[in-house]
Image: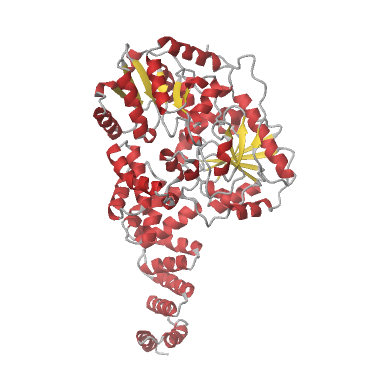
Length: 639
């Protein structure tokens, strides 16, 4: 057979639209002529005939023979495999031409889609720019998902703003732009950006909530019914997932096997500042503890604590969600506790692969974990009152004191510090907030300005992580009659110094609708009383929970006006502030908030109650854990 004539004939038939005839010649030709052009023409014919998988295979062969390292034919194979739903082959081929993806939106979309599905959000950064610059709506939507999970990446703000300028009518981009505006306290953008959404809420047009990130939704929306709608995917059948998971065979052991899932298993993370002592105290005679760790290697390198004291370590960082779930099942875990929820670096989707017979959310995310197969969420009677039940698909497990653990053993005790050392005025009443930038809403800052106006000898002490945030707060407060010298800013310092410096303030004033969480317990540990306002969702009720657990429930104001009035009253009552600080020091060693062993016993009782129901084949139900008797002797002292 004259191969050159045969190829020419096949090519001519293809041009005429005679694809079967061209294919017949090519099938004979590939026996003797295995070259790039033959496989490419073979792929083109297959595509015209609707055989995408076969076309992908032909392009794959052409790519292997191509002299270019970044073969466009390998690219075509990757995209076709992706269109066919063969994500394994698609990713394998795409990795061979990965450099192209930085400027190729289709390839960037392929990588981002697959990595998000696998839970590998740590791998998507190189592809964000290409998809964000695309005009394809599918690319834009995946870009929004990718950007939301990297809120602190300095390149994201520019990308988001550029996207929003191009597509101002996309609610997802408006919501994401608001996230970045809140991060730097840019109130001049927050108010106009939110106005169209506020109008939609008034009209009952709530569909846009499905485009919101559940974590950032909590920061502007304190309505539990609306929180439940954030990113809600009706296509996810939680009942079907739960039924399938509970039907899987499981062997219960003598010990209850508890698995904790998190990216935060390193000693300097806020979660471990709370949880470390409880992990150390778990009763190893009754419980077997495994940490399913997907912490970044850079964080683990900085860790100074022997993590073996926390439990068995199983690293799942480089596993897909499905592989991680398989690993958890192989460990025969009875109760899997996710500590992240819908927060940055979380991999809660692992639970949708049926990882354990009992699946629980706790500590990291202050709300319902939408779209995720969960049996229980752990809280307390303050953060999860009975009114919350209709807004959670999870059953409520309520601990008797507070949902938040604390660590009196590893957390440094506050050392004496003077205002002069910190550059603070000696003769002023100092209100303080050490909460994150994004928590300082226009409403919270309005209240603070009102308090400062009514308390002329006071100043506001804030910890911010952004020079732009400082400028925006000064500007906003200035328009409300508060001079720049009445707001003092500080930066982050080493943890030990932060614990020390808090006591230099007179009164902590909480943010809303998202309170201080770890921040509030740190202030109370440091001897600083905190004033909060009663909330309407989990995130806005945390400080109330902590104040009750330390014995200062009177610092929970009924509403914003009462919050402002109480702050003003306390600013002129130094004796009451002194009494609160004394009570904090006394109560810290006897009240439940910092009693890690009491907390551990309540938590373990909750686990036993969950397992007892599951062993008898009972569906999950709301659980209220009975309280142990109160302490009569201090369990530690600051002395």
